[in-house]
Image (cartoon, rainbow, N blue to C red; front, side, top):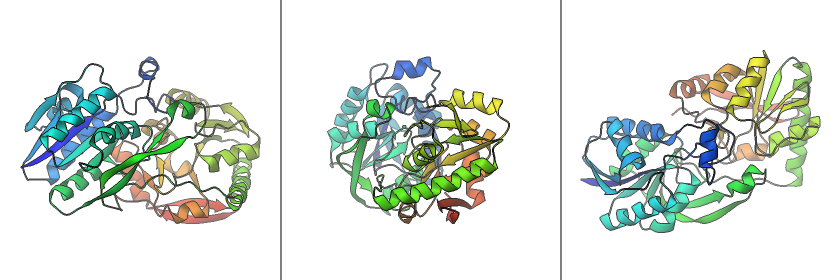
Amino acid sequence: MHKVGFIVNPIAGMGGRVGLKGTDGVVEKAIELGAEKVAPSRAVQMLKHFSSLHKGEVNWLTCSGEMGEEELLEAGIRSYTIIYSPSYPSSARDTKEACRRLLREGVDIVVFCGGDGTARDIVEVIGKNLPILGIPSGVKMHSGVFGINPEVCAKILHEFLEGELTVGDADILDLDEELYRKGEWKIRLFGSALGIVEPTYVQVGKATFESISEEEIKEEIADYVEEIMEENEDHLFILGSGSTVYAIGKKIGIDKTLLGIDAVYRKKLVGKDLNENDLLDLLNRYEKTKLILSPIGAQGFILGRGNLQLSPRIIRKIGIDNIIVVATPSKLASTPLIRVDTGDRDLDRQFMEKGYMTVITGYRVMKAVKIQAI
């Protein structure tokens, strides 16, 4: 019988939709702003799909309560062993202690639901003694141990337990959330872990591209997008995060946040560093809207990584056909696919059915990029 360690960080991702760009140290503020837990449902989603795929016996070793037991029960899984009872609310200390006990139990793999911070806590204890697999649920997920969504994580776990996949080194990256909230990007390599080797379904670490020629291309993209704004002056434009979209804000003369979500109307800033409720308010005030996004380098995600404010409700109100994707050619060279992970299976399916998205790569230069069907 396979032994699988299972850890859920129940607060992971709570700060995303309320615009906090993470939850580290600001859980109470997130709750005050109306944040809801997202990790438990993502974990259940993975477990249910895994159960439909894997017919062999598995003993899940987990924590009591919402750090694992509740999710297993909701997924209809009864074959589990409690190895640790965390405090309430749970903390990084609980994650680390659970990992120490999983090491002693000799599990085959540790599956966790959370973000980069959770991955960091796990690797701090486990190191490279056990392979780990992350179900993406945080705001920050740049490490190379995450499957691209819960269903894919289920597939990876099933194939690993069947002996069809092997393990290899994976980078654990972490972003300073306090600086992130101030608009500063400070990411560092925390260490190396054992991840599952599956290049199609396991995201690689974020890649950045910085050069003079890149900046010139961003200016070309910004010139073209400015023309689109002028041609659609009756539209609200919501601007996503990242340096390419930041260049668009600079071009039209607004004080664009680098890592937040902003909104402009007739090239004037009407909303800055917006959360989900702010966006809903704007969408109720403006009849027509377009959303400008840029994929994360090397991962290809336009939704579901670092912009959880753009919830399924927001995307539905805007409409998939009103999304404009921008990227430099070098970024697309390492991003062969567009990926979405909205947390809503029906909405993700609508993206997949679209097949391709047109990506602006220069002044009036575009490329059709395939949306990965999962």
